[in-house]
Image (tube, protein in one colour):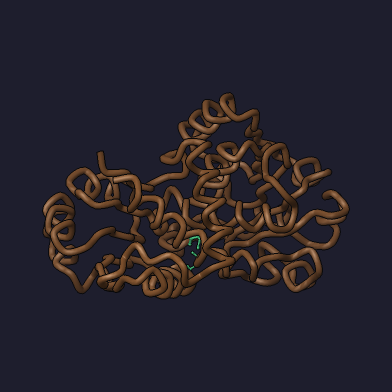
Length: 307
Ligand code: CP
Ligand code: NVA
């Protein structure tokens, strides 16, 4: 069975721990792992904008000895309605893995249904699991094992980051709190899956509407843009209801004394986070960005090893 990584709980808790341990090794010895020597190809397709994901995958694949074929999805035949299933079959004849940033999760599921090489979700409307591997690596570096720690996410609870932090966080045994305005709560189906996973790991997932209560005592505070890619013209007010959920110095003061602050970036200073917090001493956002490289290399090594 070809293993794919389409959402955070596609890795069991033990497997996620293996990938994170490998990510630390890869970071220490970036040029010692060459599973794509040849070079073997990896398809990296973007249907949405990207800075970190594009650079980290392209450089990471090169460091693994491989060659990344990086394309804008609209310039492929996908943009002219070739089926996702045929595309999965065809690309599997050329490359050893497919990395794809797209819109609906159903698109990733369709392509992976026929792909005979691993398919990696590089962000969909529903999940951003590569980002959360990097987030967990960053937490481990700054705070020790994520298990048992409290991570509070503030902002759009219905977006890809909220869903992935819930699923990936409980997989690592964290207590995940999601705090979001009315109408922007996580998908109940995702919360149910996170609760099921939490029952295996000792973690938990809780929705707490009040941002101060949610941030109080947290070990990790996380936020994300209030307007995700594809939502720019959805007509919803994504400013006024979100203001109380901004990570600013006052909210940060309610977190644990040694709390760290994460943001997957790109950030909007003055909206979801203030400049004083993101550029301040508790922020680890640029370590977090760097860890995309190491965590994704580890993920690719692991997937190629578990065919
Ligand atoms: N965090 C993240 O995925 O960044 P990019 O959109 O720049 O890839
Ligand atoms: N939620 C954001 C994440 C960007 C990396 C988006 O989907 O645009």
